[in-house]
Image (cartoon, rainbow, N blue to C red; front, side):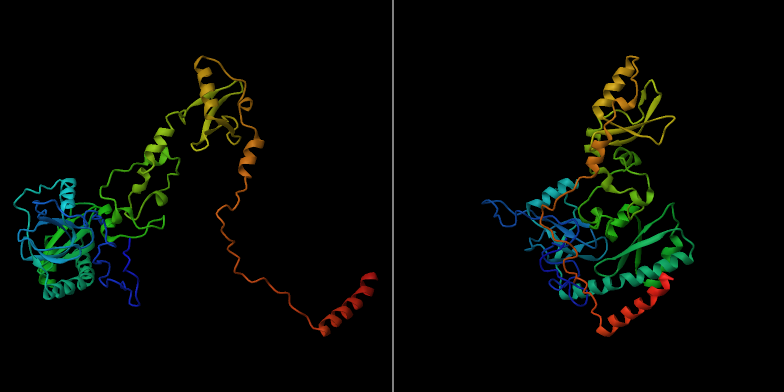
Length: 394
């Protein structure tokens, strides 16, 4: 998630575009759409599509109609129509691909009530917009203090100013319904602006704020994920994961979205597997399933009287035994079908060769040099040893 010009400078801002992430090529922004039609010309007689996609703070994107046929390209800062006043945003997509995005987000491009683009933003507009964005962190902190003073059970997670500075939208999360009428009065009095409160979910909060996940990569919801599908603990059970909420929960506090990524593959693999609750009837006793390894196609069973002694069986062996039990036939014991222990230990003792050509991590460490001792110290040691020998013999 970074364009070729966004290298970090001394002050923490990108050295190339110097727009703190909102670069002109739109390569380091969230949910970026690559315009693969940018170098292609339109057929003769066809007019360019008159709608553009404009991005505001974080991942908020809206569609506007370019009714005045202003020449726009990706990265232009424009003044757009809003309910009151005007807003400032950056053009992220133009041309025919805007029609595809509008169809994907179920927006009617023939709707004449779409908001319009007024003009390209002047330097005065950009200065006011930048000044408002610099105030957001201070106002967010002050708004949290006011919410605590009013005793409201809510968390103000983000603040977004309108481009002209006349309005601020506060995004908050709460477990229950919140009566924030007094809060709006206090904030409007303290900030002298119009206030709009908008409740979002915990996943939307993580999407807006962003972060690094436990995998070491940026959060999926803040980079490419657009829809939030429900995730249940059954997804973790199918993948043989321990139901530890600290490991399964993401930064939003909900179950990780990536639990659904490989779920279909696991469900297809488990179609041929016997149920984990299946029981095997033997002459030695009833055996229960303790563990399943989908990748090795192995199952581990143990007797009721010997729960610590596990016997490894293959998937085909278990299906064969269950078919015999269905016909009221019992096998002698699990040991008759169990995989030899030697084979299991050989699999564990496999040594993987370095086929990639990686060097050892200690290749830069200098070997320890033996400390040279003086001749005087060696002679003193010999004298001490000679003195100790008679005493030892005695």
